[in-house]
Length: 120
Length: 120
Image (cartoon, rainbow over all chains, first blue to last red; front, side):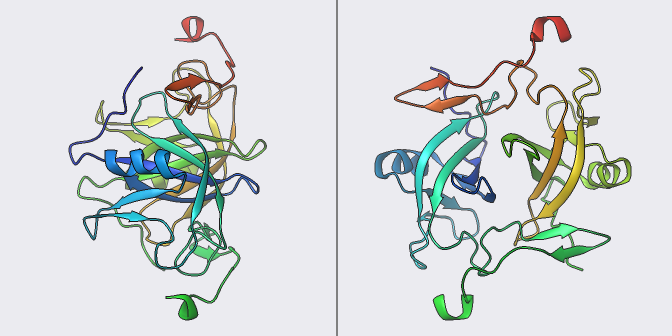
């Protein structure tokens, strides 16, 4: 079995896609512990590069990601999680973190799923 | 307008999603030049970290990506390209680079779109 190629920091990027809508929701980073915990628990775990710690997605908001499938890419250095996203992926209140599209500048086109001032 | 936050190497990851099938095809990296050329030409350009050079996706295979929409994430450090993928995204011949799924080991589940020994 070909193993995941962790980078110099022990991380790989993980793309998260919602199973039902097929929307790309976010990209976060995993270390081996986050990867193993994701497989073990069926809930997406990541490693925060800014806080230097493991996190369970949704640990503060309750907006967890139930993992349906885990893919690896041809280079063994990127993960794709297909998930059932609860409520919304983005801490800003948008369903997807990719809520702005380029149109001679970044224009908001995403949908707000919750009021982020009430959740955090 | 909030600007893209290029990392210490001047790069950001870019997720590529096919518009028609909504499949996640690949993740590659962009520098500012690749981003600008992508907007200018409507064809996906990336920066190769291994070859240290700009590349037009499909420059050797002809399997270009016609860019339909360009999104940025909430942190301004990840791009999502929604594209019309010609033939296949992966140099291995698979439609998507994410052709292996975890099932007590990596199992091939993707579809071969072309014979990679004949194209490269």
